[in-house]
Structure formats: C-alpha cells, structure tokens
Length: 240
Image 1 (cartoon, helix red, strand yellow):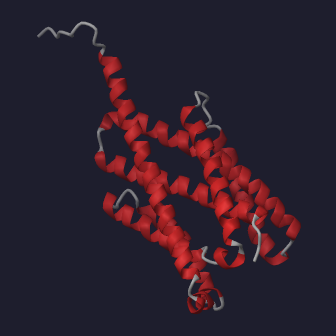
Image 2 (cartoon, helix red, strand yellow; image 1 turned 180 degrees about the horizontal axis):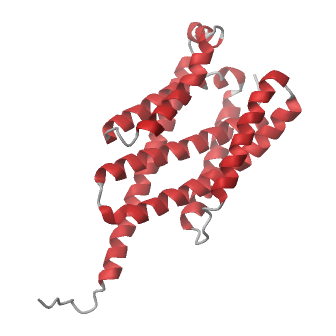
Image 3 (tube, one colour; image 1 turned 30 degrees about the vertical axis):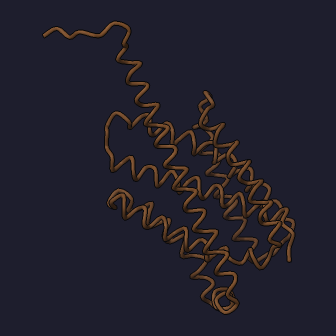
C-alpha cells in the first residue's frame, strides 16, 4: 500500500520535536528529584543538629563510622541493584540515602556560622546551574572528560584517606581546591551524559528505564552539588 505524507510535514522533524519535548520533561524530572533530595538532606541535617544528645551519640561515639559510611553503602546498593529494582523502590532508596546523608553532614551547622553556610550554598547553586547549563547546551562532545575526571576523583579519595592520618592543613587545602574543580567538571559532564543517554534511548519507549534513569541522573548531580558545596565550605566557610 502506498503511504502518503501531508504537505509541509516532515516525519523526521516531527520525531525530533517529540524527542525534544520528552528530553525537557526528563531533565525537569532529574532536577526535580535532585532538588527534593537536597531539601530532605538539608532539613534532616538542620533538625539533627538542634539535638545535642543526638549529635553526641552520632559524632561522639563509634556510631559516627556507621553514620558516615551508611550513605556510601546505600549508594553502592542502589547502583548495583537498580536494574532489578522497580522505579518506586529505587526512588524510595534515593530518599533514604538523602536522609542518611543529612545525618552525616549535620555537623556543619555546629562547625560553621549559619550565614556562611547560606552564602556557600548560594554560590554553589549558581556555579552548579551555570555548569549544568553548559553541559546541556554545548555542542562540544565532552564525553572524553569522563576518564580524566574519574581518575582525579579516585586520586582525591586516596589523598583524603591518607590525610586522615597525616592531618595536614596544606594537603587538605589542595584536596579541597582540586576537588571543587573535579566536581565542577563532573557537573557539566554528567549533564551532557544524562541528555545523550535519553536521546539514544528515547525511541525504545521503556518507561521503567526512563524512570530509573532519571533517579540515577539525579543521584549523580546531587553528589556533584553536595561535594562541591562541602569542599567550598571547607575552603571559605567561617567556623564557629
């Protein structure tokens, strides 16, 4: 049977328009999930810091190691099991992770002045938005940054472990400066990766994949934002 096409309508253009609309919805969901997780983290951290007894238990006893390592354990679990989880289970795990992260960073409300925390958060938000917009809009393929940034991240983690024993202010300063640059690069890189992954998979129409992909994308951007914030706070924060 012959197929007819209405004058002035290009199927390719129509498909591209559908992908563009879907991509915008996907990115909005990624940023929405990330923002909600950040809100949970902030609220848990703030309210936990108001309880002297809770803070003493969490950071004045061996329980501090559980508080510090629990978020890492949940991230590993989510990354390893995401393909076998339902989208709702993955999202619930993400909320649990953001709450545990709030507990683990609640000390900042005791260690730094409130105005300093607010100012650093604002600076981080502006920098993050600029970098993420760059990653989304640039025509340049920055996928090559990935291996370099991951290697840098591994190096930073190794240096942080070493500095636990050395307690060197100079090394800590270097870790913070380099760390900010690495997470800045990861913000742009991850944004472009999330965008490209959606474009490549949009034709499949797999709603479960799209839902779980948005959660993992939000997790990546959340970690970039939070680490950049904490490193900037260690560099410029006014201590109590």
